[in-house]
Length: 83
Image (cartoon, rainbow, N blue to C red; front, side):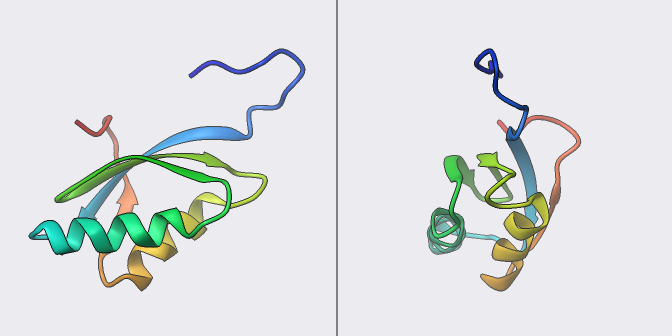
């Protein structure tokens, strides 16, 4: 990820592992939950995973995970990039 000179590294790409998803409805529910968060740009949501860009000054990483959990799924930071 590139950053502009003079800015802090507050914008991060997060890859998430999400359990409990099984269909397009699940994908839509997770996408909707993530798009409601300020400072979050959804890159990709698929069954079992998501990738988002987050301004952590606005929305901490834990809030992203909580939004997915509040939508009814379990989420954790992935140890490898989402595909």
